[in-house]
Amino acid sequence: MKKVEDYVVNIPDFPEPGIIFRDVTSVLQDADGLQLAIDELQKKLEGLEFDVIAGTESRGFIFGMPIAYNLHKPFVLVRKKGKLPRETVSMDYELEYGSATIEMHKDSIKPGQKVVLIDDLIATGGTIEAAAKLVESLGGEVVKVLFLIELAGLNGRQKLAQYDVDSVVCYEGK
Image 1 (spheres, rainbow, N blue to C red):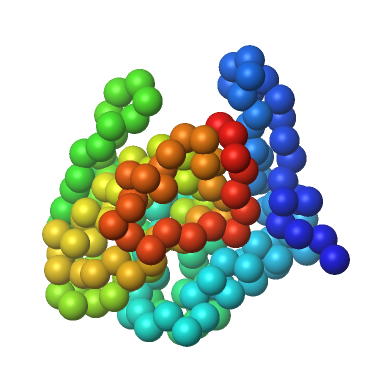
Image 2 (image 1 turned 45 degrees about the vertical axis):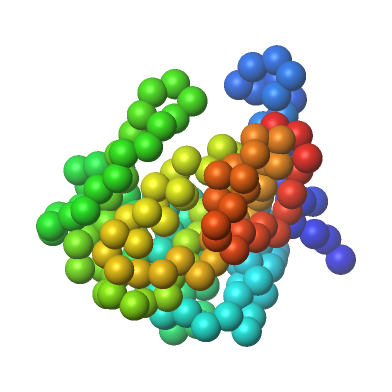
């Protein structure tokens, strides 16, 4: 029986020497890998009470939406600035080399709703931390933050210490 990590292609020295790039697109390109990834993520939600799944652009959409569909939950988009058509709330956050802004529709989360945030990978945790703050600014409660892959060497989990963080695959390095 294959595991999710068996579908991940590891690319050494990308984008710079000493880094091993974990390519999640190889999981998507294999029907069995994709099904396994969605199933394993969904298992992490068993027994959890929640109202909404939110995913960050763009791979959070890929992994979060099928789970929302399977569990008959609404799916909320967390997008880069300027991509959503209705009134939005936004949050700035720091990147390794600069900053960025993400947005959600102002009416996407109702006060008191319990929200699961999903993304493909946690590195430093900046994007998902900003998404969690957006959810909270709308009155929602983040009850779980879920990733397919975790790069533990980048300490993103520490940035998200106040949340229930889980991942399917954890790599010790960067």
